[in-house]
Amino acid sequence: MEGKEEDVREGANKFPDRQPIGTSAQTDKDYKEPPPAPLFEPGELASWSFYRAGIAEFVATFLFLYITILTVMGFANNQNKCKTVGVQGIAWAFGGMIFALVYCTAGISGGHINPAVTFGLFLAKKLSLTRAVFYMVMQCLGAICGAGVVKGFMGHTQYELLNGGANYVHHGYTKGDGLGAEIVGTFVLVYTVFSATDAKRNARDSHVPILAPLPIGFAVFLVHLATIPITGTGINPARSLGAAIIFDKDFAWDDQWIFWVGPFIGAALAALYHQIIIRAIPFKARA
Image (tube, rainbow, N blue to C red; front, side, top):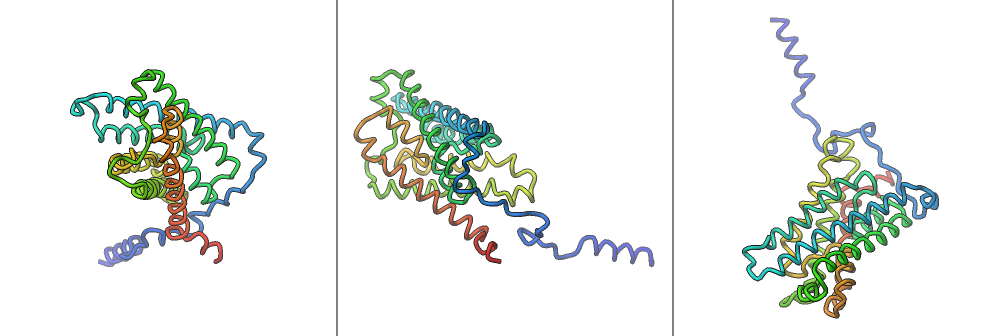
């Protein structure tokens, strides 16, 4: 009997009734906040990895525009919508490409593929201003080239008849509706990016870095389902700019500001929410 009682006491010590959960289960030894990226880092300009990351962003955004715009054009080109991929298929094309491309480029450039994502991460001091500007330039160039290749395949006349896959506020909605949709949609995306790539979660859960592209791609898919009827869904200034430059019609340019202002506001709000409310980083720094 004594042996059994001792086993029970030992088991109780090994498996206490009250286990700390969530962030309370972590100690300072488990995780250390990475230092913020400097505003300017001149040394980056002499590093090959800096330019390799920019090339990766260019290629990824090129492929993203090529596949997604071609999918949109195929949907618009068919009079019988039941024989096309439909709105759900377009949303899957955008979300699926983000999933694949983030998986491929995350280890090289971080897999941003979107100036709004880059802007949000810059505000959170995850990368320098030098790298952020370089990424945005390469993303926009990749988007222009991707949309240009689609126009080459479709032909000038057919491309213009199908509106070139350009973003604009659709009939029945106001510019305010479009701006609001872009802000909220980008907030969902960038908040998901922050949560899926959180270094603290990576330290606690080894599977998080592997699965990160999945929730990011799924967020893009869901946002497209919701906002395609309103704006065609931008949430990516490079995607909107590339399509507008190649299409080059007034109604696409009239609404272009919405697809820059909206995503940047949404990204900024997501960065503030995650850093200040969720992670409380400024308060930790004071402590």
